[in-house]
Image (tube, rainbow, N blue to C red; front, top):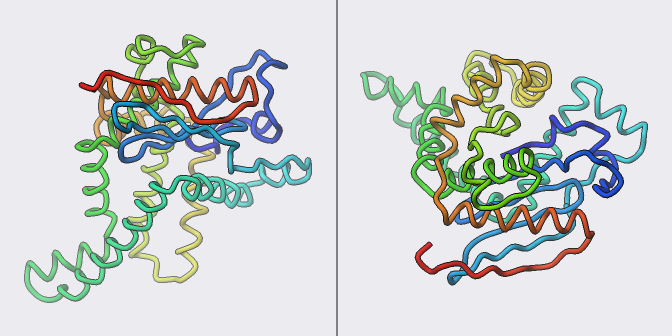
Length: 284
């Protein structure tokens, strides 16, 4: 998953025409159950498999980038830029039905889990364990999240998404072969921010103030802006990607990612959208 927070403003703040410049397009994405979503400067794609075919739907992006110079400058000011960051992320989540459902379901499960842990907390070893989980719900939530990423198709599509984007950035064209030999570890992956989310969540029980519920989001994104490109931060992010948030994709996932990014590249270049179908062997 790639957020748009680290993309240069001159790319984001205007409609990008790849025919007017030699710079590469910058793509972001989100893996989901059974497919993936990719985001370009002007268009977005949703790709998945159905009945032995790869379906890729491309449409104008629902992420609006500020074009007013004053708003652009505001979007670069510390703290204020955090509100733009979370707003863009929210638009990405809302733009994908499956991602939105997964997010809502996760929040519901988390609420039920914390409520049960609070009810069971008390004296004894079991009560103490329940109390710990109630105070630090991030721990079991991370276990479930990492399990979903490593043992379901989400992790494989996440790896395929990275490989397809890396192939475009390295080879200018995306084929099954170029994607296969590209790395599934990407320095712009949005899950690299996970380390800052974990730290903020672990601090939460020690700050008994209502405002921290909002302030922690600002702290997370500001830490990401300031430290996200440092070697240490990238190293931690690469570690999380390699062992927890991505899995080496198979041919099935790579084919979906390759078809999706190529359809998106074509839309960005030709300013055309639509739905395309690609037949694949039934065994994949």
